[in-house]
Length: 496
Image (cartoon, rainbow, N blue to C red; front, side, top):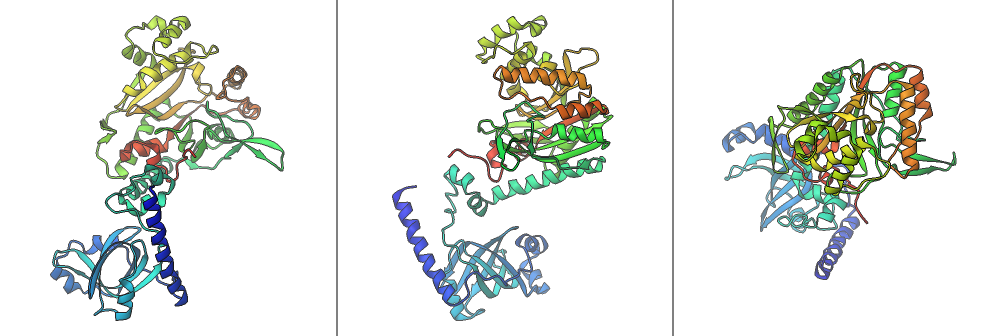
């Protein structure tokens, strides 16, 4: 911000504070007894279609509305203002012939951004614009700082995210994204409840980081004098509930991963995780697809949507194996190379993929997939048959124990969901945990710890089950055509 802008804003602040002091002296600052009877959107929906004459015949009187002044045109003895409430905008006509002349004089000094109350009758102007003819007006809240300029909006993207209230105040489009986010979450919850799932809440602070491969945030519990970890996933607690006898559970949860910031990643994010005992792998893929399609319909989308310039057909989901996709996008590799560690390491170097010495062929193959395949998966694609090495909580496939019964859903080149048949063999799970512990000792700070109580729970017997995690933030990005995760999180994490 330039010095001239800073000086200009300081001058505006000083002038508005002077006005506020006058309101304080008159004991009318920060009014809290004005109760609006209508919302702008309701008035437009109910009466916007009527002609000027039809509206006059209906004689809609004694309504009241409250909102922020976003546009003001003063024309001597009469003025027009546009007021924005939580539902939208509506115009008001204010004349000194209809209200107290002294109040009208004061109104002329009210500022853009002030929150006001208006009571009066509904009519249409000569240009057929729905308007409230004010018979009474009240200054409810004095705005001390100016709104962002109407035409420039929030040119500074940093201010947009750091002061989200300014973005929402000035950009109805941003408000609409977050309204749709709420509708998407409501649709997901409805889909789960209608299918018989029980919504539950599990701890956000864990004694052992687990449930996913990620670096945790560490905090300190002073009374217990011990470290705790913000959850990276609720998985292990949700599966404990399967052991306890709840057969279908879900949680729309906040999780935390101590990773970098990007257009795809925020360290605090929202997930849907659900687990169903005795479910089938194929049936769960279909259910996941249905959840996404229903959420899209809930916000008024058609089968074909646009995301980051790509046309995406949500009526058509394909299923492909990870091996076949790697071969399809890497002609230099043959099927026999996909389990050859030396060949995979050599090929990874040509892709400039950084490797760690401790990684086996499954992990290196996954890195090749992420580097060369993911970005090309524009149309909805369920990728299956992941290596067990990179699936520490997944059940082994009956026919090929080197792969897991696991899928990931990619749309627009981004991962949207991850699901698998759950590993319920306590001995196998203990071995996988030990491998994670070894990886952590070898320097992998994303590896899981050994959760002894979870092994004990499995020893009591967990039914066969399928579990899925869906990234809510990315799903909202896709369904609302947003390029950055910061545009679908009200208060994203930002650099200092």
